[in-house]
Length: 123
Image (cartoon, one colour):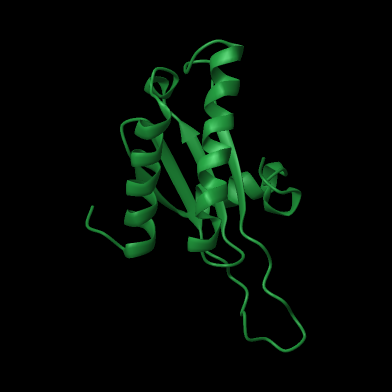
């Protein structure tokens, strides 16, 4: 389970991450990352937590498959929160092939997308 303070819930936050963030696409998913815009060294302010949200459409599969994909993605993101800059907004959008993929395949695609976004890899 993803902790409450790390959940992306508001529509505006999803829109900010998708419209103003960087994007990395993989065969099973697309990751949008909006790095934290606040200054972590500002006096009296603590760094906000990294928050993540998920978009899994009906193209991925039925309700059971969509829920399974969301649970897998939540578990994978929870393990990688420490690698992301504080205050970041992350939106993971599952593509239709994600419903047939296993945990390891989703992990590989998520790691590759995050590596590209964080490491500034070539397009």
